[in-house]
Amino acid sequence: MEAIILAGGFGTRLRPLTYTRAKSLLPILNKPMITYLINMLPDKVDKVILAVNYRKKQIEDYFKKNDFGMKIIVNDEPKPLGTGGAVKFAERYITDSFFVLNSDIICSLNLDEMIKFHMKNNAVSTISLWPVDNVSEFGVADVRDDGNIIGFVEKPKPEDAPSDFINAGAYFLEPEILDYIETGRLVSMEKEIFPKIIKDTGRFFGHKFEGYWMDIGRISSYKEAHNFLLEKQGINNYQGDNCEIKGSLRKSCIGNNVHIGKNSKLESTIVYDNAIIGENVVLSGCIIGENSKIGSFSSIKNSVLGDNEKLADNSNINERIVWTQPTPEGYPDKQIGNVIEQ
Ligand code: GTP
Image (cartoon, rainbow, N blue to C red; front, side):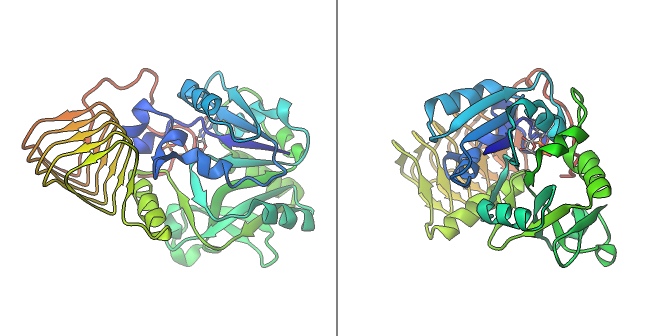
């Protein structure tokens, strides 16, 4: 069975972290986000098609070095084709019913159960559904008791919402849906293709599941995912290899080869590989990029430092994105495809 993993987005809401790396390779507890998804795939999935574009080479290199015991095809789009266009572009690898998975979700969804649900309903498309409190920020599914979805309502007022279930970014599809997607142009699966399938077939279903679900689309959800997983694993901090930690850590995740000077205090902070934090530094709610350096006696709160950034001694920063290098060529200055507000 084939699974297409959509991993070609720029991840603009996660800049500056995505200026230097593919969103799907951003570490969560020191492991690339995409590995959580690969480990969730049912045994029957023996072929994964990675739909890539931006930072394709990084993704390719990662999968060359790491064997997941399945065939991995890196399918490079000539230009960003959006969530639907990327699926169409993988058409030549599809032989039967297949999964499409956003690469930026971390969840407890059981994909075998999803296949069973799909078969029982003789569905053309089954999407995973997750309940939320803040319906007015999402496309909300109009879903009947038996799971049949009859439409979506974009960002409804709570009193107008047809349900509290939203698209959780995992789909199980019949190959006939490929006929709905035009070749070679930017197509949104969610906005353009799903409504057509609902209208034409009526066999569009939503599979609800329990446990947890996180869409790692924004800096806030990226940080929340770390907190959640630290708590779930019952650990206070996570630490990579070869670190020299002379300060103290609380609810923080530290990469490999990190140096933290004496009397420094880190709380709810993520530090990437090879970072150097001086002495008497306070970091709270921060993300510190790879090879970054923070001078002694600095105080940084709720801020993100991109890779290779340097802050002088006595820096005092609050709620800031620190990026002093040129923006990578071709990187868009706003979201393309599905626009989801920050
Ligand atoms: P933002 O720019 O912050 O909206 O992030 P994004 O570009 O990742 O977009 P979004 O979160 O809507 O994407 C959902 C999933 O689809 C992610 O796993 C993306 O990697 C993937 N994706 C989005 N656009 C494309 C595309 O044009 N091609 C491919 N192959 N994947 C895409």
